[in-house]
Length: 386
Image (tube, rainbow, N blue to C red; front, side, top):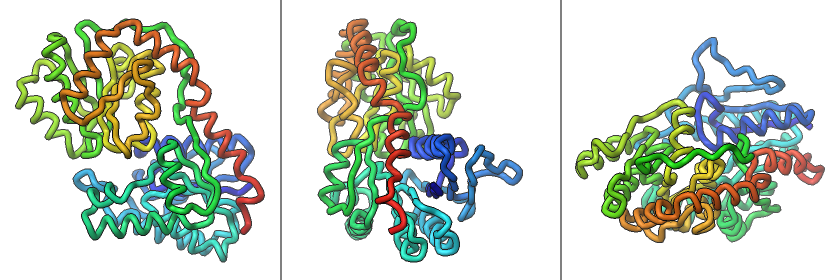
């Protein structure tokens, strides 16, 4: 089949869960014998154009900064959506399926607008489905109302929909989705086979790895370490990543006098993070919003428990069986997260062994390959040439 993948970023020129998903999907579809085109924004320097075997990469917009102060800028998705629309109006009949991400919606709207002429089927990945309250908090009263309305309109479009958490599947159905919803459970591209376990670091160390944007709440890791040190005095922390909240995190470290206890090195090589994670007491991810929670799976693959925070928009909670492969903090406070950290430390090797067993039990469903097989097989006749 002739499949057009649509995403405004491309791995490894930008790095994230969505980028890895679409890169992996493109390569899997090629391996399965499909013709694959990938529409994206330009992210590379002249002379560094992508060369992915079997994949035709077409930039439909210029290089643009996607974020400002941790919030998605409106100009890049508008420009990308316009570029997608133009391409599909000219070339839509060359594809059987257009497969896009829902957010930030303009590419999905473009695919729907060009569908009558292109007569292709539409497949859409809903990495997240935001509530009214979250929209309001993200964009304000008026902007939130507009965002919520656009999201709902997109849910009404005929499509084959994929989600990566059950809570978002239920929310999408509640929006009145026209079409079937399939819950994909795996996004881990590496091996989850049992390896020789590494002992926990001495002194005990908490690790955070991710972007530092408001919804990740990385500064809470600093508060949690300070509170946990009342019961685990030699506890230390390593906070990896960068973003608009990095200065806030470093300021919090200084404010609490933890300069000799908590490292905030910024972006580092993946191998450095991997080494830190495998010997961590636990990985802490205090996000308010996650579409999946890949870091939980990555930690579990090392036999390292994860600490996440309960919340209606945090799908990572679905990947933590409390007391089995980590703990779920009830509240987004330093004290609540500290309690979960201390519990991981107290459980010691028993919890690490339990985490390894949990990972072995769920390795197949957590693998990226399992999800890619479902999607590749899902390009059935009922999804194309409407």
